[in-house]
Amino acid sequence: MESIDAHKVASKLKLLDVFRKQGKHEQKRSRLPPGQRVTPGFPVLDLGIKPAMDLMTWKLRIFGAVRKELNVSLDELKKLGVQHYTKDFHCVTTWSKYDVKWTGIPFKKIIEFAQPDPNWKHVIQFGKDGYSTNAPRADIERDDAFLAFELDGKPIPREHGYVRLIIPHLYAWKTSKFLTAIEFSLEDKPGYWETRGYHNRGNAMLEERYS
Image (cartoon, rainbow, N blue to C red; front, top):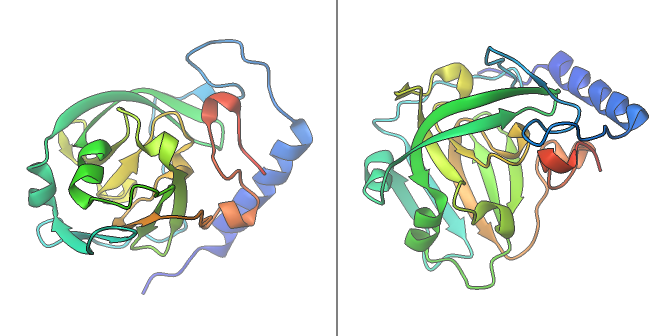
């Protein structure tokens, strides 16, 4: 079984100290978030774990403050409606990639399907690699939040997590790769990086890197 790469985690925590010392940057361009630079590539960052997943047998567990717990296949989710998206992608490690092409299911459709408690406040995401992260209702109910399963017209490769939520205005750590479960929650439950000093929301345009 793969284990978390302690060196990668330590490097990310060290970067957090750098963010705190340098403070926030002035917003100079409306499209590029402050403190970011554009990269032509698509760097890979993770916890050092890249579990294999078979999307033919994969199911998304939906639980918590919902009418009933669900275990839904990708084919079942696709029946809710599939859309193509072209969105910028921002990593807290200061790189941004413009115009990433995804295929996915609007998260609003998943919300309707799950029938959560009217008072739900957060969605907590869980990955097969042991990762978790939280997202507030106001961010994940947006029209451009979606569950992605294709990148550039092909299945998302293993290094990019097979299936994941995309919330374009938040830093990428706010969406879990290797997604296996989502919890609709009446309360906030900070995840892996949020409990280690990273910002609880992570809005890239506001440069919310650390708490």
